[in-house]
Length: 246
Picture 1 (spheres, rainbow, N blue to C red):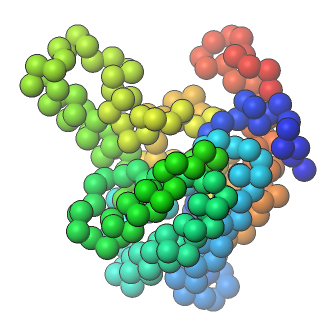
Picture 2: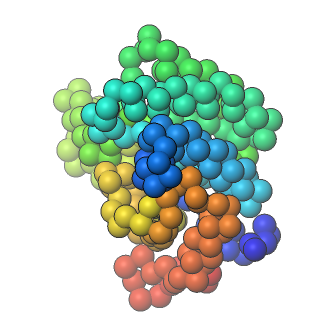
């Protein structure tokens, strides 16, 4: 069990999670894939609550990639329904828990129902000062990087900056995550060992923990186990000396 006041929690600021394995969880139980996604939403609520209890400042969840639109229409429709359900049913609870919600990803049409619901949730919680919950929706990291490059190109084209002004920092300022620290820890469930076009720039020095369980079976105890693995590591950031004592 992790103590909320552990020194580790002072070092661990940002956890990112690839929530994988909903469909496989359902298939193993002889259920439709949509049942896995529904159970996965319950896991999200449990993990968000635990993150708040641990005093974690930032949690980022990969909920729906830009590539997921190619899945069967019935599954996509169910995922959209669950996202809307989460935004409607949970935003009040999250607001009361002092959680701030924000979304990152490729822009959606302003008049779409899901866009309006996302904006409403962001506005309702924008002044909260607790856990910042970032949901990557319609997100693909290559798309994000391409959009950032275009922003810089437009600034050069309009003489706002020169080519010489382009630095790592100016590039980061154009990313969706410009106001977030890079993740300290990435967790991926389902036993897969890949990052699936998620936060490619931001994960440069992130510690990875791969869990051999599907997302619906990812308990708060497994969350704490992943954090404990992170705590046991020594981060060097390319150097010989660790930057922090964990």
